[in-house]
Length: 139
Length: 139
Image (tube, rainbow over all chains, first blue to last red; front, side, top):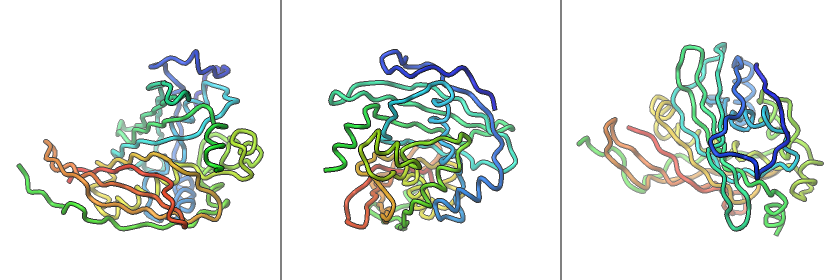
């Protein structure tokens, strides 16, 4: 698994379109079994959901001490990953914007396997002021 | 134009999942980075959100919605043409039971067949909506 230099996250400096970490890993049968156990679905086909491809790509580039709250996910499924195959992931910053004075970033990742099969595209909308969400949710 | 194969408002199979801290931790352990976060570390949940307990990843609800849609469309369809788009409204935590329901809301003829859109709803045991969105597949 390749990693890149990690830098401290600064929302203001984040650029739309900037590349996040690119990496490879081998999906094992154990990973698939563990995922199916976690979601209580013996036929679940995309353990990649729990690998959090986009967030992992982000974490490979940024040290983020603020954290964030996941406001939404968009996932496109193309082909279930096959245990034993290497998965290649590329991530990028798709968007950033303010909504109701709260900062959001949108990160996305695309996963293909070693044979070039497109597996999944994932996009996450993350609000980067988690304490505000905490206050709202505690009401 | 191909024949429309689904009835509008047709319900998809509902899926109910009991959420435990064990299942949350299991989900988090499926990643390739050994990361502490608001899902598996009570201190971080308190520090970043002001919560006394960790929260389940929204991606667990994505997996539950994907299961419901896969059962509706069939794996051969959903695992190759499916999408899930969820917006998270309320936190999900240990002890909650999340139920996914949905119904066909739209159909559109496209080059590859019929794009069927399903309105998705995730509710907890108090009938509070924790997430809403939609899923699609091409039949």
